Length: 296
Ligand SMILES: NC(=O)c1ccc[n+]([C@@H]2O[C@H](COP(=O)([O-])OP(=O)(O)OC[C@H]3O[C@@H](n4cnc5c(N)ncnc54)[C@H](OP(=O)(O)O)[C@@H]3O)[C@@H](O)[C@H]2O)c1
Image (cartoon, rainbow, N blue to C red; front, top):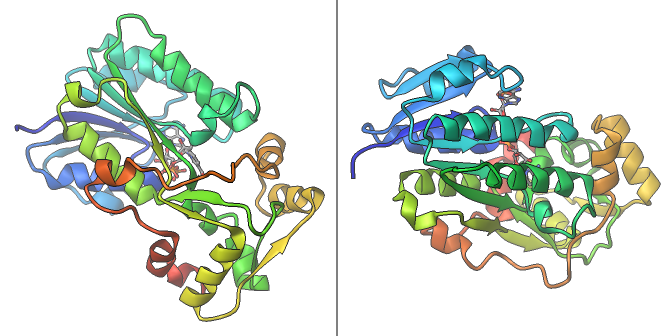
């Protein structure tokens, strides 16, 4: 199969870096990345001959509109600090992409989009972004990835307590099962789909849980990897909310969502994920081993 002409939005983040690296590996792919910082992108990817960098921002789509034509596929992450704006930007990008004859969009949404209608702020925004793109008339295909909790959250939410208080904290019971996924696995699946025949995935929606652990199990495996005792500290909703808003500087609506427990006791690793990846998904233990240095 010959290479693809792929446009990437969000290529310099946790998930996007893996998408970019996998796509660039095949010389016949032609990859255009729409980035806020060309310098950051060059540091991450160097200057391979199959990469074009466009300095742009999705809050102003003038350059996006000029540069998207001539591509067949779009990888899309809209990760805005203001959750309410996510559907607006996602739909605006989708409309312009399909109008320029993009045949496939692979969008990163979230598992919360599948929760009951308007039962969480994060889920509502993810659902509206997905539904808004899906409702664009005469569009190409739309593949939606719905990851559960990103393992990289440990690098900004849990890092302070792991380093300074030898604990992970949360408001859920210590034996509640939580689903986790590695951003590398999300990126790897996206890159595979972007190079598969478009007709294979059509309008697929893929749930992505790579590992399921209770907070107690998670504390035990972090202890093993870091070789020091890390405990799970169960906080009241107010204590957890205060930590998320004051220490992690999370806005009210995100912090409010994160004190809730939306996970069912039936939560499982996604059966189809190894099928999409062509291998077993990364476990939390493997992710911690790889990122150990950040927590020491
Ligand atoms: N955290 C979770 O547990 C969780 C769970 C489910 C789903 N998700 C979803 O997963 C995705 C997060 O992926 P990630 O971890 O890869 O995010 P990330 O590391 O924060 O990366 C975000 C990417 O978007 C780019 N970006 C941000 N604002 C932009 C703008 N205004 N214009 C153009 N590009 C912009 C960033 O560029 P810079 O490099 O310039 O910053 C970066 O490339 C989101 O869609 C989120 O909703 C997250």
